[in-house]
Length: 246
Ligand code: NAD
Image (cartoon, rainbow, N blue to C red; front, top):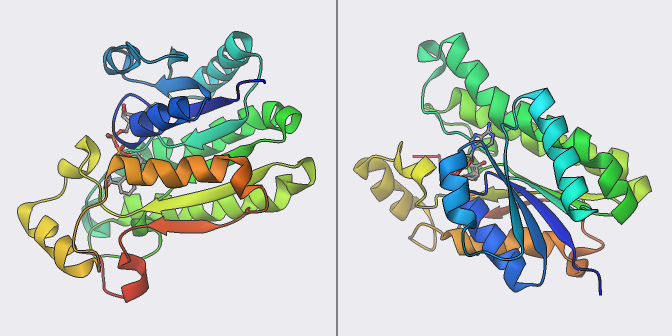
């Protein structure tokens, strides 16, 4: 049996690392991509079968080199998980253009660039994209103009991929996590925000990296072979309540 290959961006920690670990348990090989070389190599140590690729998804030349290196190493790509992301909390009046661009560069440009560069490989494998957006892309708040807008755009980009690439047998879906205690979230979640999330979420807790990874790997699997163009919130029920983001 051919072991399938997943390319996971932002794989050095958090949701990307949990997704890598779960893919391995399910018999996949994983190309772990991250711009933080030190953390990536630490994360990849002891994981098998994986290869680490230190590249920045927001830089076109690096993305092309990375995809070439992944295809040379593994010979195929069956799933692309566009997970690399950066957080930013700020209202529109306080967000200068450099900050706005930095968020868009990774969260939106990165998804576009990696997706475009991997289409030939996914056409060969009739593979799948899973893009990681956020509940912040579904619901506006007074705090997240750049982050929320970037994630809303990722939701639309996913639908665009599904519409355009279905004829090649390529599926594209989007996962919108609720809050998870990763480095990204905990850098911006104050004790007040944490308490407000606990109140607002019907399950009254944060999610775990593993819970998000389960949804991602399901969408990449044959079990989801007739699922494409979907936006799935893994958020403890938050989106269903209509309550505003803390
Ligand atoms: P994290 O900070 O733990 O991990 C993100 C990884 O992405 C890091 O290893 C970082 O080095 C890497 N990265 C960032 N920019 C990159 C770039 N330009 N090129 C390559 N690698 C880059 O964050 P996480 O919480 O695991 O987030 C993963 C995804 O989930 C992100 O897209 C994030 O927006 C989304 N998300 C997270 C939460 C949450 O509460 N943690 C909620 C909703 C959505």
